[in-house]
Amino acid sequence: MSDFGMSDDELEQMYQEVILDAARNPHGKESFAQDLVDEASSAAGETTLRASHEYCTSGESHQFNPTCGDEVTVHVEVGDKDPRRIERLIWDGQGCSISQASLSVMTDLVSGKTVDEAMRLFAIFHRLMQSRGAGLDNEADDEALGDAVVFQGASKYPMRIKCALLGWEGLKDSLAKALATQPQ
Image 1: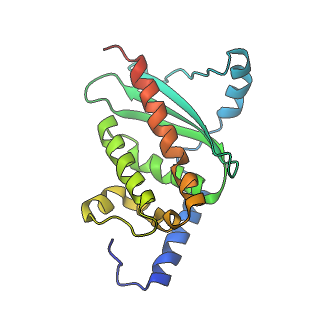
Image 2: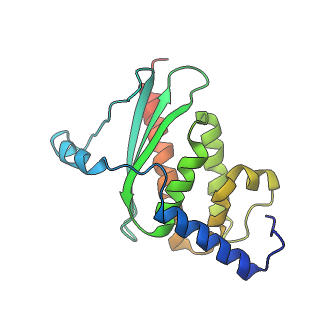
Image 3: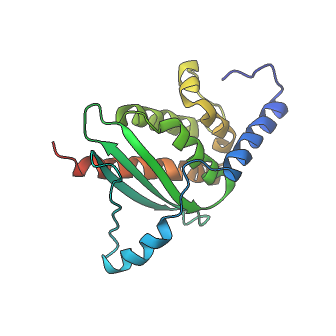
């Protein structure tokens, strides 16, 4: 990853500022999950939101990190024409600044992308989290991740990796659910 001509401490400080800003001003966060919890109890744990576009199918996934208590519900709407595109992505949840910032950055990164593009970004982000702080060795992958590269520092700490990945796992699961309900 490029160091932008900064020292390691300056770079780390910049990353922390990006993460804190994304956590304070989250993109894609909407309050909907609490209402769903009430409905879910009567539907044996299954919850479905209707797509707000008639040409979309929706999928939703609730993720919980028992280690720290972070939780999120990710709701995605996927267009029904090829290539399948993420038409809407929203989430609701609570947790640490890393989980909330990761969700915000992920939302900006994958909204409007095709499902294939989003899954490619999912795979690159997973590799970043597996790097244990070393980062990626491919500059094109760094560029593809955009602001998500700031989570490289979180990848040094196994307990933080789960926080950063929580929303991404919800994205993957909700996309799979949306695609499973689309007519072939």
